[in-house]
Length: 158
Length: 430
Image 1 (cartoon, rainbow over the protein chains, first blue to last red):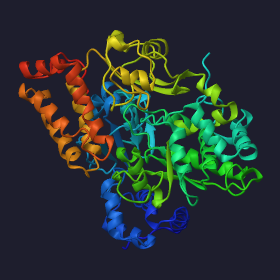
Image 2 (cartoon, chains in turn blue, orange; image 1 turned 180 degrees about the horizontal axis):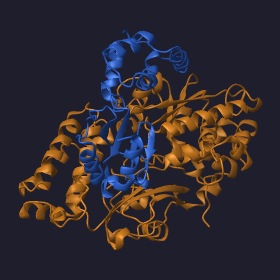
Image 3 (cartoon, rainbow over the protein chains, first blue to last red; image 1 turned 135 degrees about the vertical axis):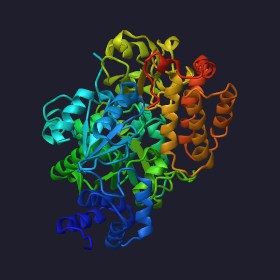
């Protein structure tokens, strides 16, 4: 079935485009919107966005390939992004990542077979004062340790 | 008790709401600016305050503004840099989430000073909560007449828009930020021309950090002399120091510029955790050369840190203890820069990759002594040979760690591996 934006998304896209004097500026905000609505952005959605905004599909593709927050293929219901940059590394993010890989039975970059969790590593999330830090979907989770991680996994149904 | 300019409201109930902001005297500075002052007067005030950019470069704010001021009248833009991507930095987030109106007021006054009618807050994509808080604050301000058309009954109009990034460290660089706002990949531009003359959509643009702009209401309300009475000449005002790593009390501390490193580390951040000793500190984020125990007395300001061979940068103080491998630390950071390279300049794109390969070789025990001079050679082919400072920053962890901890590199090479990992101690290799 051909993908299309919901009515409320279409309204939001209109509001977004009104903020900028240039159509192309709307690409990043609409990529965020599309990621939220569809869960990922494939070629079909690239064309959908380009058509809606009146920009070249190549320009949407260019942004999609450059920015790290967008997924090109379906992800799990929960996307866990573990920061492995300096302050988080100094405080044990390596151990947390290893635990997650073992516990979930997947390597970083992959999704659990039941489609529940995608595990990714990311660079500095700007919350170093409460390292180690990870994001689950849009939310930040601070001061992580293995015990807390296990608690979160149980809550998510893993 | 040192004066608080930036964290004054943080900690109050509902501090992010306009009700709370107004009850603590908020928007009085904007009122004074718009009703009683001329735009040029405000620029002069900021110049006189000697405020320097708080994003990392420390460029005098008044001087930066004067470049835009000189441009012929017409459409101009202000971009607030809320990308906060420098590893170790988490200070702008405190203002954005807990006192967004301070930033909104700072933006409004700055736009009035430079005859700007549209401002964008470019906020890193991961800060979803911050973007939400800012959008709400902007709506609240519009309803009360602090933003929008004919602000406070004047002829000044201003629209402020929040624009989320998509996950990219380089978009914190001014011209890459502009490219990203225009919907493109965040690849830095050739300069000149500078954003002050050719910026967003080709128009004169000023780009300032969150913390920089958040100082403007205080300067306007209390006068530049009150601001410059804190700190030292050309190193004025307070600074948000974001302390992380091996300390007992990591967090954001607002202290006068010029506070000693030892005061910050031991009197405020609780000293080194786990009973360990201090080994190294990056005083201004991951792009700043390491300081060691001999520098504990250094004043944390732009000029003193430069004289000590490092930089104030964003004021992100990353603390490393004596159980940590410096080769592993250099490797972790160089991998970061390689990942974040936009790819435009060959020395950065290729050179950082080579630095990572050589460091991996050394960290895994396969290094040779010649690798150390190879690291220096490759680094020297990057520094100063790129369009933006990412390349320059990318070589600092390896250059600085080789300079201060050469014996650790030699030990890795001679003993065929990481002595810290074998001892079961910390590795930041990641």
